[in-house]
Length: 194
Image (cartoon, rainbow, N blue to C red):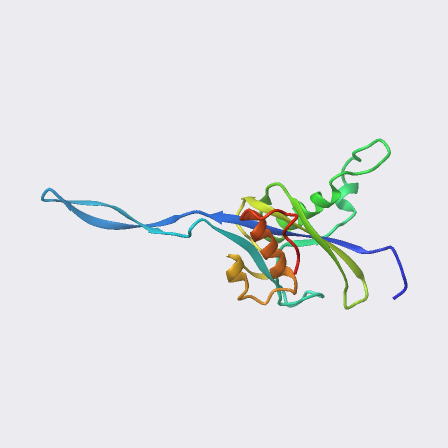
């Protein structure tokens, strides 16, 4: 491959959500002071305040990594910035990549996310010869219910340990581990890709 500067720019987001203690309600008949009463009984199901990550299974028609589990993301398109007014008089756009990532998340899984934080970057060459730069980020789930587009076949919210059971694209599990460590208090400077 000849040396070149042109790359496809891709961004991904490890979306996390803290699942608090949940409870199940079901009807019951109670007995109090010789009287029966109807009410609801709450049975607590302790999720232990676990942090879960959204992973999706890529559709079989995808060019790269078909049927593999991954996190939401996609390519930067010129419309992500040229469809809006430039940020400066000289014609530059700020936050183009963030705009692109938020669009991809909305399109792929129908979610809104909070503040987006940089995790790491990687490069690879697709089977069709196109060089790709991927910037990986993480963000908390802010709103919406998961609704998949045609690029994904399935989804699951899973803890880091549960993610180990899925056929993830190589490297994604370690990225999830890094985010898990950061969210549990390890400094970003100490958290490295293994």
